[in-house]
Image (tube, rainbow, N blue to C red):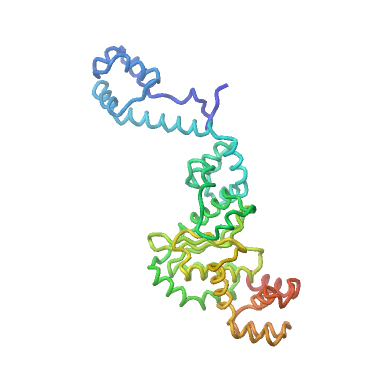
Length: 367
């Protein structure tokens, strides 16, 4: 049985020579006469009609003179035939290794389809072709040769699935390229972003939907396209940065561990990367990867959310009661879960301490 692609068997892909044969039969013109009219050899005419040779641009022009049918008609026939043959060969030459890679992208594929970023097709071969187009690679196996700006050691982690990581980065680009921003020079962008830090911080007091809208608007005003992208198993990342040649910065982050304090810390961590110039090229921010770049971004986030000296004095007081935390949070113009999360991170509170308070604030204020 002939193999099929997109519902067509190989035999149903029509070579333009068959159309040429039908035209000659309709007109009662022998192949020899066409050879004489076009100045081509009878053998050349025969090989084209039998699908053994393509219709070149030069031959298409000669056919236009000999048959009165525009050269563009024959050229388009040949182009469409070549395209269908390539698609057929693509679908029927996929290796088992590439099929295995495609299966590792199941979660990503579901998201892409749900977001209508990927066409709905049936069969693994057709899905692989669509993924190739979306991810910009001629073979999914090529992804493993790509690297990223960011922590090199993290890229070697056994928890990383390179294809999922690459797909996540591509999703970041797709989700942010449609966001309109006020494009700015790098220096001007950083200046504007620093000015907006208090307003960005104040967004945490808004309900989640309003919060995201406000954040997107504030970032867009200084040339940053901001988006929160789901995390996928195999891509342990917290952020993505990319500065385009047009002066647009792409800033994406994931919602790690579903905690509001971690969201805000991560957000300011990523802002720190922008201000430190880490996004001049494509930059992947991996989770839990130590290093000077990450330490600088961490320090920036900590100091933006809670004043360094004020926090040191608060810790020295050793009063971590709910009342004390609420009062300190109010002075720092943050919600209490920011303080609780910082104390837990620094080992002043156990992760189980005040868990109910964090849940309350997340459900009633930040969500």
